[in-house]
Figure 1: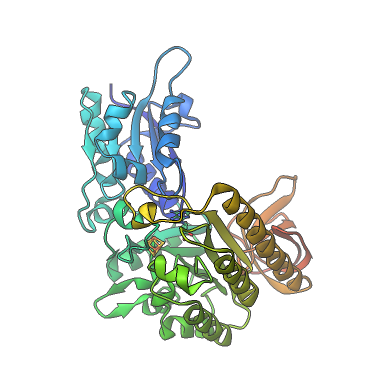
Figure 2: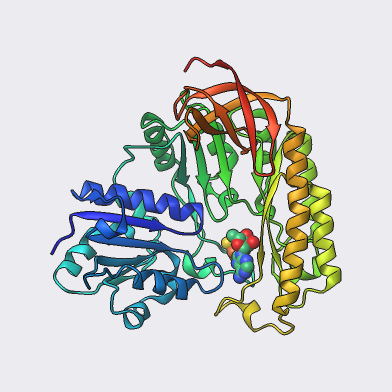
Amino acid sequence: MTPKTFKIKSFGCQMNVYDGERVAELLAAEGMSPAAEADDADLVVLNTCHIREKAAEKAYSDVGRLKREDGSKPMIALAGCVAQAEGAEAKRRSQLIDIVVGPQAYHRLPEMIAQASRGARPVDTDMPALSKFEALPPRRRAAPSAFLTVQEGCDKFCTYCVVPYTRGAEISRRWKDIVTEARGLVDAGAREIVLLGQNVNAWADDGLALADLIRALAEISALERIRYTTSHPVNMSDELIAAHGEVDKLMPYLHLPVQSGSNRILKAMNRSHSAEGYLATIEKMRSARPDIALSGDFIVGFPGETEEDFEATLQIVDEVRYASAYSFKYSARPGTPAATMEDQVPREIMDGRLQRLQARINAHQVAFNRSKVGVDTKLLIERKGRREGQMIGRSPWLQSVHVDTEAQAGDILDVTLVAAGPNSMTGAVRQRVAA
Ligand code: 5AD
Ligand code: SF4
């Protein structure tokens, strides 16, 4: 039977969120309607993440949980990076799975759904360059802050990471297609666009680079804010740094993962930058945009990491004074070079290091938030808060700000930041900016 309703569950990174939105639009264009819960849906798409431990096991147990009390089940599509990594093997591991679709093959879903409705179990993990974007329907609805994938894949091959295998080689979407999609998002209500890519700052088209694209998008008058993520330190060009000082709509926030503060470990990770090189980039960024909020990613317990290496990581955290940062315990991913390296670090040591690192990161985050108390700024309202009359928006520095207001999602307010918590701020409205 052909499904009439669908539910998409996305896990992991922002790119999966973006892909999930595009798949929802594709299925809606096919005449299907979204269901509130997986339990009510004829088709469930599990848009999975493979970056860290037990990803595949988690995906299979999520699949198992879609079985209903009366013994029935929806049509199940395993999508995303676990689907890419497992391929046809997924059908053998779980009889419940009807469709296996990798991240570069979503545009083929309608056809695969038709095949599954006839009892087949199609698998598509091909990686045709670019075709999925061009085959997806245009944007019709957009949140106040909307994602736009401009680049996918990775050629860097950090020794711990599955991304080059699950998302494929680095490809950049065409300038023209990105500008068209950005205009569509703005017409559909977006006030902020977040440009996405695994190596977003490696984006290039016909001699043009990310800084050029940002400057062009800033010309769209109803677009108020531009962000981009995730950047690689080696692709942080002087032009891009300069844009932070010159383009008002480019928000003062940069997510720039360093992973470790130890040059020995950075080398073993194949990161192609040193701690000093990274700090020099941060320095340049701070001179272009002194109030920039910096964010990063860290891995503790990479094979061979000693106490001394770990202390170098704590030190770089202190030098950069991150406004926020994500930290993870190293997880051996099958098929990556680091998985078979000697000196894997025992779990208890990793646990201890992660705790110490997170405490250090939190201290800087609290200090950053406190430094913004009393500051007048603009807030992009994104959604309702928990309390009646409360809304939640984002500051230019990507802080979550709670504010009592009658304003709606998509409004931009003049606020004073009046209080700081560890994970969010409180704002007080000054006046409404005319839209
Ligand atoms: N183990 C732990 N963390 C990882 N990351 C990527 N691969 C691994 C792994 N094998 C982290 C990195 C990356 C973020 C998205 O996930 O810090 O920047
Ligand atoms: Fe993974 Fe490194 Fe590529 Fe980032 S740059 S996606 S960590 S291989």
